Length: 410
Image 1 (cartoon, helix red, strand yellow):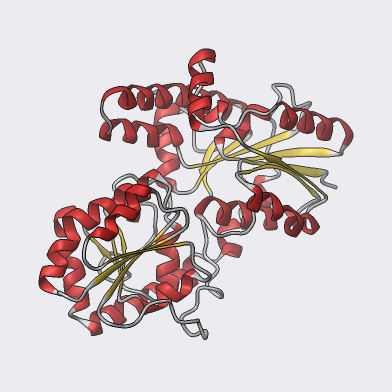
Image 2: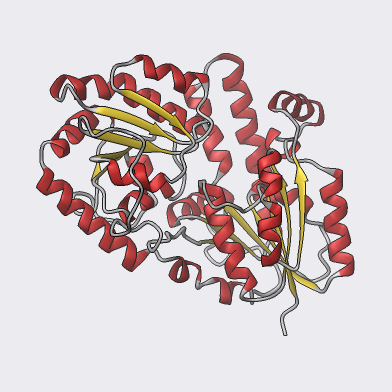
Protein backbone atom coordinates (compact mmCIF):
# COMPACT_ATOMS: atom_id res chain seq x y z
CA UNK A 1 0.00 0.00 0.00
CA UNK A 2 1.31 3.43 -0.94
CA UNK A 3 2.40 5.77 1.83
CA UNK A 4 1.59 9.47 2.17
CA UNK A 5 2.52 12.24 -0.27
CA UNK A 6 4.31 15.44 0.72
CA UNK A 7 3.20 18.23 -1.64
CA UNK A 8 5.46 21.31 -1.68
CA UNK A 9 4.07 24.30 -3.59
CA UNK A 10 5.28 27.89 -3.85
CA UNK A 11 1.82 29.47 -3.59
CA UNK A 12 -1.22 28.17 -1.72
CA UNK A 13 -3.19 26.18 -4.30
CA UNK A 14 -6.52 27.88 -3.62
CA UNK A 15 -8.55 29.49 -5.02
CA UNK A 16 -7.72 28.28 -8.54
CA UNK A 17 -8.00 31.77 -10.01
CA UNK A 18 -4.60 32.26 -11.68
CA UNK A 19 -2.43 30.10 -13.90
CA UNK A 20 -0.14 28.46 -11.34
CA UNK A 21 -2.95 27.95 -8.81
CA UNK A 22 -5.21 26.34 -11.41
CA UNK A 23 -2.57 23.72 -12.13
CA UNK A 24 -1.46 23.17 -8.53
CA UNK A 25 -5.04 22.90 -7.24
CA UNK A 26 -6.01 20.29 -9.82
CA UNK A 27 -2.83 18.31 -9.22
CA UNK A 28 -3.49 18.42 -5.48
CA UNK A 29 -7.04 17.16 -6.03
CA UNK A 30 -5.67 14.29 -8.11
CA UNK A 31 -3.00 13.40 -5.53
CA UNK A 32 -5.60 13.20 -2.77
CA UNK A 33 -7.34 10.42 -4.72
CA UNK A 34 -4.11 8.40 -4.67
CA UNK A 35 -2.89 8.78 -1.06
CA UNK A 36 -3.11 11.08 2.00
CA UNK A 37 -1.42 14.40 1.20
CA UNK A 38 0.51 16.78 3.45
CA UNK A 39 0.70 20.24 1.85
CA UNK A 40 3.38 22.83 2.66
CA UNK A 41 3.07 26.13 0.85
CA UNK A 42 3.51 29.90 0.96
CA UNK A 43 0.92 32.69 1.01
CA UNK A 44 1.62 36.00 -0.70
CA UNK A 45 -0.67 38.07 1.54
CA UNK A 46 -3.33 37.95 4.26
CA UNK A 47 -6.06 37.08 1.75
CA UNK A 48 -4.05 34.06 0.64
CA UNK A 49 -3.50 33.03 4.27
CA UNK A 50 -7.24 33.06 4.88
CA UNK A 51 -7.81 30.56 2.08
CA UNK A 52 -5.95 27.95 4.11
CA UNK A 53 -9.07 27.15 6.09
CA UNK A 54 -10.96 26.34 2.90
CA UNK A 55 -8.15 24.11 1.66
CA UNK A 56 -7.52 22.31 4.96
CA UNK A 57 -10.35 19.71 4.70
CA UNK A 58 -8.85 18.44 1.41
CA UNK A 59 -5.55 17.34 2.95
CA UNK A 60 -4.19 15.32 5.86
CA UNK A 61 -2.17 18.29 7.07
CA UNK A 62 -1.52 21.83 5.88
CA UNK A 63 1.24 24.32 6.66
CA UNK A 64 0.93 27.78 5.11
CA UNK A 65 3.87 30.14 5.56
CA UNK A 66 3.47 33.88 4.99
CA UNK A 67 6.02 35.18 2.47
CA UNK A 68 7.01 38.78 3.14
CA UNK A 69 10.46 39.09 1.56
CA UNK A 70 10.50 41.88 -1.02
CA UNK A 71 12.09 41.54 -4.44
CA UNK A 72 14.76 44.08 -3.47
CA UNK A 73 15.74 42.17 -0.32
CA UNK A 74 15.68 38.86 -2.19
CA UNK A 75 17.96 40.32 -4.87
CA UNK A 76 20.48 41.57 -2.30
CA UNK A 77 20.49 38.17 -0.56
CA UNK A 78 20.97 36.44 -3.90
CA UNK A 79 23.96 38.61 -4.76
CA UNK A 80 25.47 38.04 -1.33
CA UNK A 81 25.03 34.26 -1.40
CA UNK A 82 25.58 33.56 -5.10
CA UNK A 83 22.12 31.98 -5.41
CA UNK A 84 19.29 32.69 -7.84
CA UNK A 85 16.80 35.35 -6.70
CA UNK A 86 14.06 32.78 -7.31
CA UNK A 87 15.40 30.74 -4.39
CA UNK A 88 16.17 33.52 -1.90
CA UNK A 89 12.66 34.93 -2.47
CA UNK A 90 11.22 31.66 -1.16
CA UNK A 91 13.81 30.79 1.47
CA UNK A 92 12.32 30.01 4.88
CA UNK A 93 13.82 28.30 7.92
CA UNK A 94 10.28 27.55 9.16
CA UNK A 95 9.35 25.73 5.95
CA UNK A 96 12.61 23.79 6.03
CA UNK A 97 11.89 22.72 9.61
CA UNK A 98 8.32 21.72 8.73
CA UNK A 99 9.48 19.57 5.83
CA UNK A 100 12.02 17.83 8.08
CA UNK A 101 9.34 17.22 10.70
CA UNK A 102 6.90 15.70 8.20
CA UNK A 103 9.55 13.44 6.68
CA UNK A 104 10.56 12.30 10.13
CA UNK A 105 7.12 11.78 11.67
CA UNK A 106 4.80 10.83 8.81
CA UNK A 107 4.70 7.77 6.58
CA UNK A 108 5.72 9.67 3.46
CA UNK A 109 7.05 7.77 0.49
CA UNK A 110 6.60 10.40 -2.26
CA UNK A 111 7.69 14.04 -2.34
CA UNK A 112 5.89 15.97 -5.08
CA UNK A 113 7.33 19.44 -5.68
CA UNK A 114 5.43 22.09 -7.60
CA UNK A 115 7.63 24.87 -9.07
CA UNK A 116 11.41 25.03 -8.93
CA UNK A 117 11.58 27.42 -5.98
CA UNK A 118 10.39 24.66 -3.65
CA UNK A 119 13.04 22.11 -4.67
CA UNK A 120 15.47 23.75 -2.23
CA UNK A 121 13.52 22.04 0.57
CA UNK A 122 14.07 18.49 -0.70
CA UNK A 123 16.86 16.81 1.31
CA UNK A 124 19.73 15.27 -0.63
CA UNK A 125 19.08 11.96 1.14
CA UNK A 126 15.40 11.09 0.84
CA UNK A 127 15.87 7.61 2.26
CA UNK A 128 14.54 5.87 -0.83
CA UNK A 129 11.43 8.03 -1.16
CA UNK A 130 10.21 9.02 -4.61
CA UNK A 131 10.82 12.58 -5.78
CA UNK A 132 8.59 14.01 -8.50
CA UNK A 133 9.55 17.51 -9.68
CA UNK A 134 6.95 19.58 -11.51
CA UNK A 135 8.89 22.51 -12.93
CA UNK A 136 5.77 23.55 -14.89
CA UNK A 137 7.83 25.84 -17.14
CA UNK A 138 11.53 26.18 -17.77
CA UNK A 139 11.92 29.32 -15.67
CA UNK A 140 15.58 29.81 -16.56
CA UNK A 141 14.55 30.17 -20.22
CA UNK A 142 11.95 32.75 -19.19
CA UNK A 143 14.62 34.88 -17.53
CA UNK A 144 16.79 34.52 -20.61
CA UNK A 145 13.87 35.91 -22.64
CA UNK A 146 13.54 38.77 -20.15
CA UNK A 147 17.23 39.57 -20.60
CA UNK A 148 16.81 39.83 -24.36
CA UNK A 149 14.25 42.61 -23.87
CA UNK A 150 15.99 44.40 -20.98
CA UNK A 151 18.75 47.00 -20.84
CA UNK A 152 21.53 48.03 -18.47
CA UNK A 153 21.67 46.49 -14.97
CA UNK A 154 18.39 44.60 -15.42
CA UNK A 155 19.78 42.76 -18.44
CA UNK A 156 22.76 41.69 -16.33
CA UNK A 157 20.47 40.57 -13.48
CA UNK A 158 18.20 38.57 -15.77
CA UNK A 159 21.15 36.87 -17.44
CA UNK A 160 22.61 36.03 -14.03
CA UNK A 161 19.26 34.61 -12.93
CA UNK A 162 18.91 32.54 -16.09
CA UNK A 163 22.41 31.08 -15.71
CA UNK A 164 22.23 30.29 -12.01
CA UNK A 165 18.66 29.05 -12.12
CA UNK A 166 19.39 26.65 -14.96
CA UNK A 167 22.33 25.18 -13.04
CA UNK A 168 19.93 24.63 -10.12
CA UNK A 169 17.18 23.18 -12.35
CA UNK A 170 19.59 20.76 -13.96
CA UNK A 171 20.92 19.56 -10.59
CA UNK A 172 17.39 19.07 -9.24
CA UNK A 173 16.30 17.16 -12.35
CA UNK A 174 19.26 14.78 -11.99
CA UNK A 175 18.12 13.97 -8.44
CA UNK A 176 14.42 13.58 -9.22
CA UNK A 177 12.80 10.34 -10.33
CA UNK A 178 10.91 12.33 -12.92
CA UNK A 179 10.74 15.99 -13.95
CA UNK A 180 7.53 17.32 -15.42
CA UNK A 181 6.77 20.27 -17.69
CA UNK A 182 3.46 21.70 -18.81
CA UNK A 183 3.98 20.95 -22.51
CA UNK A 184 6.06 18.69 -24.70
CA UNK A 185 7.67 21.84 -26.13
CA UNK A 186 8.94 22.83 -22.68
CA UNK A 187 10.00 19.27 -21.87
CA UNK A 188 11.90 18.96 -25.14
CA UNK A 189 13.65 22.28 -24.53
CA UNK A 190 14.79 21.12 -21.09
CA UNK A 191 15.93 17.75 -22.42
CA UNK A 192 17.96 19.54 -25.09
CA UNK A 193 19.70 21.83 -22.60
CA UNK A 194 20.10 19.39 -19.71
CA UNK A 195 21.09 16.26 -21.61
CA UNK A 196 18.47 14.22 -19.72
CA UNK A 197 16.39 11.68 -21.58
CA UNK A 198 12.69 11.19 -22.25
CA UNK A 199 12.15 8.85 -19.26
CA UNK A 200 13.51 11.48 -16.87
CA UNK A 201 11.84 14.56 -18.38
CA UNK A 202 8.20 14.38 -19.47
CA UNK A 203 5.17 16.53 -20.21
CA UNK A 204 2.13 16.72 -17.93
CA UNK A 205 -0.24 19.17 -19.56
CA UNK A 206 -2.72 21.63 -18.12
CA UNK A 207 -6.42 20.99 -18.46
CA UNK A 208 -9.57 23.08 -18.32
CA UNK A 209 -12.73 22.82 -16.26
CA UNK A 210 -15.03 22.95 -19.28
CA UNK A 211 -18.09 22.46 -17.07
CA UNK A 212 -17.31 25.75 -15.32
CA UNK A 213 -16.18 27.58 -18.46
CA UNK A 214 -19.35 26.79 -20.38
CA UNK A 215 -21.03 29.41 -22.58
CA UNK A 216 -24.41 27.70 -22.17
CA UNK A 217 -24.54 28.57 -18.45
CA UNK A 218 -26.40 31.61 -17.16
CA UNK A 219 -23.38 33.87 -16.66
CA UNK A 220 -23.79 37.31 -15.02
CA UNK A 221 -23.32 40.30 -17.31
CA UNK A 222 -19.94 41.99 -17.30
CA UNK A 223 -19.86 45.40 -15.64
CA UNK A 224 -19.87 47.14 -19.01
CA UNK A 225 -22.49 48.46 -21.37
CA UNK A 226 -22.65 46.99 -24.85
CA UNK A 227 -21.71 50.07 -26.84
CA UNK A 228 -19.20 48.73 -29.33
CA UNK A 229 -17.13 45.65 -30.18
CA UNK A 230 -15.24 44.36 -27.16
CA UNK A 231 -11.71 42.92 -27.26
CA UNK A 232 -10.62 41.22 -24.01
CA UNK A 233 -7.32 40.18 -22.48
CA UNK A 234 -7.34 38.26 -19.19
CA UNK A 235 -4.51 37.60 -16.74
CA UNK A 236 -2.72 38.51 -13.54
CA UNK A 237 -1.73 42.09 -14.26
CA UNK A 238 1.38 42.38 -12.10
CA UNK A 239 3.03 39.61 -14.13
CA UNK A 240 5.71 40.92 -16.47
CA UNK A 241 4.75 38.96 -19.63
CA UNK A 242 1.11 40.09 -19.26
CA UNK A 243 2.16 43.71 -18.74
CA UNK A 244 4.36 43.59 -21.83
CA UNK A 245 1.58 41.95 -23.85
CA UNK A 246 -1.14 44.51 -23.13
CA UNK A 247 1.23 47.47 -23.40
CA UNK A 248 2.46 46.31 -26.79
CA UNK A 249 -1.06 45.55 -28.05
CA UNK A 250 -2.44 48.87 -26.83
CA UNK A 251 0.40 50.88 -28.37
CA UNK A 252 0.96 48.99 -31.61
CA UNK A 253 -2.22 47.20 -32.63
CA UNK A 254 -5.19 48.83 -30.94
CA UNK A 255 -4.82 52.24 -32.62
CA UNK A 256 -5.09 50.57 -36.04
CA UNK A 257 -8.13 48.62 -34.83
CA UNK A 258 -9.79 51.85 -33.61
CA UNK A 259 -9.02 53.49 -36.92
CA UNK A 260 -10.98 50.76 -38.72
CA UNK A 261 -13.59 50.22 -35.98
CA UNK A 262 -13.92 53.54 -34.09
CA UNK A 263 -16.14 52.20 -31.31
CA UNK A 264 -13.96 49.17 -30.52
CA UNK A 265 -12.90 48.78 -26.90
CA UNK A 266 -10.01 46.89 -25.31
CA UNK A 267 -10.62 45.52 -21.80
CA UNK A 268 -7.67 44.40 -19.68
CA UNK A 269 -9.24 42.10 -17.10
CA UNK A 270 -7.24 40.82 -14.13
CA UNK A 271 -6.08 41.39 -10.60
CA UNK A 272 -3.38 43.79 -9.38
CA UNK A 273 -2.85 46.01 -12.43
CA UNK A 274 0.40 47.94 -12.07
CA UNK A 275 0.73 51.69 -12.58
CA UNK A 276 2.15 50.90 -16.03
CA UNK A 277 -1.03 49.03 -16.92
CA UNK A 278 -3.33 51.70 -15.44
CA UNK A 279 -1.63 54.31 -17.62
CA UNK A 280 -2.95 52.58 -20.73
CA UNK A 281 -6.46 53.83 -19.88
CA UNK A 282 -5.34 57.24 -21.16
CA UNK A 283 -5.86 55.79 -24.63
CA UNK A 284 -9.41 56.06 -25.99
CA UNK A 285 -11.35 52.81 -25.70
CA UNK A 286 -9.05 51.10 -23.17
CA UNK A 287 -10.56 49.70 -19.95
CA UNK A 288 -8.63 48.28 -16.97
CA UNK A 289 -10.95 46.39 -14.62
CA UNK A 290 -8.71 45.09 -11.85
CA UNK A 291 -10.03 41.96 -10.16
CA UNK A 292 -13.55 40.89 -11.15
CA UNK A 293 -16.13 38.69 -9.47
CA UNK A 294 -16.44 36.24 -12.36
CA UNK A 295 -13.98 36.22 -15.25
CA UNK A 296 -16.53 34.34 -17.34
CA UNK A 297 -18.71 37.43 -17.54
CA UNK A 298 -16.03 39.30 -19.46
CA UNK A 299 -15.20 36.32 -21.64
CA UNK A 300 -18.89 35.93 -22.47
CA UNK A 301 -19.22 39.64 -23.33
CA UNK A 302 -16.17 39.67 -25.61
CA UNK A 303 -16.34 39.68 -29.37
CA UNK A 304 -12.66 38.71 -29.63
CA UNK A 305 -10.18 37.42 -27.04
CA UNK A 306 -6.53 38.36 -27.55
CA UNK A 307 -3.41 36.69 -26.15
CA UNK A 308 -0.60 38.80 -27.66
CA UNK A 309 2.18 37.49 -25.43
CA UNK A 310 5.77 37.95 -26.60
CA UNK A 311 7.23 36.01 -23.68
CA UNK A 312 5.28 32.86 -22.87
CA UNK A 313 6.12 29.41 -21.60
CA UNK A 314 4.08 26.24 -21.64
CA UNK A 315 0.29 26.22 -21.98
CA UNK A 316 -1.62 29.46 -21.53
CA UNK A 317 -4.67 28.91 -19.32
CA UNK A 318 -6.17 32.14 -20.62
CA UNK A 319 -6.30 30.62 -24.11
CA UNK A 320 -7.87 27.35 -22.89
CA UNK A 321 -10.48 29.30 -20.90
CA UNK A 322 -11.42 31.42 -23.92
CA UNK A 323 -11.63 28.31 -26.11
CA UNK A 324 -13.87 26.58 -23.56
CA UNK A 325 -16.13 29.65 -23.57
CA UNK A 326 -16.53 29.27 -27.33
CA UNK A 327 -14.77 32.51 -28.21
CA UNK A 328 -12.83 33.63 -31.26
CA UNK A 329 -9.21 34.08 -30.21
CA UNK A 330 -6.21 35.86 -31.72
CA UNK A 331 -3.04 34.50 -30.10
CA UNK A 332 0.62 35.14 -30.70
CA UNK A 333 2.82 32.25 -31.74
CA UNK A 334 4.33 32.21 -28.22
CA UNK A 335 0.89 32.01 -26.56
CA UNK A 336 -0.21 29.24 -28.93
CA UNK A 337 3.00 27.18 -28.87
CA UNK A 338 2.14 24.66 -26.15
CA UNK A 339 -1.50 24.12 -27.15
CA UNK A 340 -2.64 21.19 -29.27
CA UNK A 341 -5.04 22.99 -31.59
CA UNK A 342 -5.37 23.81 -35.29
CA UNK A 343 -4.79 27.42 -36.42
CA UNK A 344 -7.67 28.88 -38.43
CA UNK A 345 -9.94 26.07 -37.23
CA UNK A 346 -9.81 26.53 -33.44
CA UNK A 347 -8.21 29.99 -33.18
CA UNK A 348 -6.20 32.54 -35.14
CA UNK A 349 -2.43 32.74 -34.68
CA UNK A 350 -1.01 36.14 -35.59
CA UNK A 351 2.24 37.88 -34.77
CA UNK A 352 2.57 41.57 -33.94
CA UNK A 353 2.40 42.96 -37.47
CA UNK A 354 -0.73 40.95 -38.30
CA UNK A 355 -2.62 41.28 -35.00
CA UNK A 356 -4.68 44.33 -35.90
CA UNK A 357 -5.84 42.92 -39.23
CA UNK A 358 -6.72 39.59 -37.58
CA UNK A 359 -8.83 41.27 -34.90
CA UNK A 360 -10.52 43.62 -37.38
CA UNK A 361 -11.35 40.69 -39.64
CA UNK A 362 -13.04 38.83 -36.78
CA UNK A 363 -14.95 41.88 -35.57
CA UNK A 364 -16.35 42.31 -39.08
CA UNK A 365 -17.19 38.62 -39.61
CA UNK A 366 -19.62 37.30 -37.00
CA UNK A 367 -20.09 34.02 -38.85
CA UNK A 368 -16.36 33.26 -38.70
CA UNK A 369 -16.25 34.21 -35.00
CA UNK A 370 -19.04 31.76 -34.26
CA UNK A 371 -17.39 29.02 -36.31
CA UNK A 372 -14.01 29.43 -34.59
CA UNK A 373 -15.64 29.56 -31.16
CA UNK A 374 -17.67 26.40 -31.71
CA UNK A 375 -14.62 24.51 -32.95
CA UNK A 376 -12.53 25.74 -30.03
CA UNK A 377 -15.10 24.62 -27.47
CA UNK A 378 -15.46 21.20 -29.09
CA UNK A 379 -11.70 20.70 -29.13
CA UNK A 380 -10.98 21.55 -25.48
CA UNK A 381 -13.84 19.36 -24.26
CA UNK A 382 -12.42 16.36 -26.11
CA UNK A 383 -8.72 17.08 -25.53
CA UNK A 384 -8.16 19.02 -22.31
CA UNK A 385 -10.30 17.68 -19.48
CA UNK A 386 -8.36 17.59 -16.18
CA UNK A 387 -9.25 13.93 -15.66
CA UNK A 388 -7.66 13.08 -18.98
CA UNK A 389 -4.47 15.16 -18.77
CA UNK A 390 -3.69 14.13 -15.16
CA UNK A 391 -4.40 10.41 -15.65
CA UNK A 392 -0.66 9.67 -16.18
CA UNK A 393 0.04 10.59 -12.54
CA UNK A 394 -1.23 7.19 -11.42
CA UNK A 395 1.63 5.48 -13.23
CA UNK A 396 4.17 8.24 -12.59
CA UNK A 397 3.92 7.79 -8.85
CA UNK A 398 5.18 4.24 -9.29
CA UNK A 399 8.55 5.33 -10.70
CA UNK A 400 11.78 3.50 -9.90
CA UNK A 401 14.72 4.90 -7.90
CA UNK A 402 16.48 7.91 -9.44
CA UNK A 403 18.66 7.27 -12.45
CA UNK A 404 20.32 9.77 -14.71
CA UNK A 405 19.45 8.92 -18.29
CA UNK A 406 21.48 10.93 -20.74
CA UNK A 407 20.53 11.83 -24.24
CA UNK A 408 22.62 14.09 -26.42
CA UNK A 409 24.68 16.38 -24.21
CA UNK A 410 23.99 20.06 -24.54
